[in-house]
Image (tube, rainbow, N blue to C red; front, side):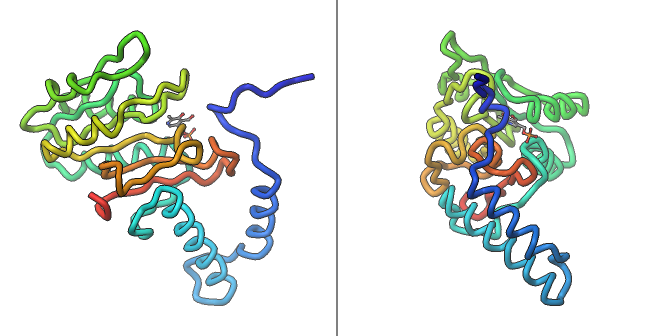
Amino acid sequence: MQIYLDHSATTPPRPEVIAKMQAVMAEAWGNPSSLHVWGQRSAMAIEVARLQVAQLINAPHPESIIFTAGGTEADNLALLGIARQYETPQHLVISSVEHAAIAEPVRQLEQQGWQVTRLLVNSQGRLNPIDLVAALQSNTVLVSIIYGQSEVGTLQPLAELAHIAKAHRVLVHTDAVQVAGRLPIDVEQLPVDLLSCRPTNSTGPKEAAHCTSGKGWS
Ligand SMILES: Cc1ncc(COP(=O)(O)O)c(C=O)c1O
């Protein structure tokens, strides 16, 4: 007998997920930008999904949910989207245990002159919030911390880290790809500005990940 043990990479979709996807593909195949009934049916399906994602993380403004093609795109959109707000390179803080979806665009920004602090983890793989206090600078514009680590599953003290960053008026992004759908997330309580998640890690389809862009709850 073979046992599938790679749920951090992706999970098998549940039968009800497959049934829902089949129904959507059969009924809501129109171009959602088209005004005719087939297009509007697709547009409606997308908006219902947006509401459901907003409910999952208790986002008060569903319009802040941005759908992307995957977790990497969601992370890149959040990080590079913030970076592009600035004409000159600034400083940002990440952890030393980020997924490549964050580590790689950060490396690119570094090559463009951005300063980067990578917070180290202890022997349990956890960050110490005190280290974030020491890392913040007058030109720090973003703190991006992975919520649940993709290799070993360590949860970071995200609430504490986010409170510290917000107290210094620094934007916070979290890569919650491994957490959303597995543990409850309430962005009304968690002071993050941007959160990336995807359904693949919680028995959803591989094609539809999403980034929630946060001005709505910052
Ligand atoms: C924490 C984390 N972030 C980002 C990604 C990238 O997601 P995707 O493979 O959908 O691009 C993954 C993928 O496993 C992940 O575990």
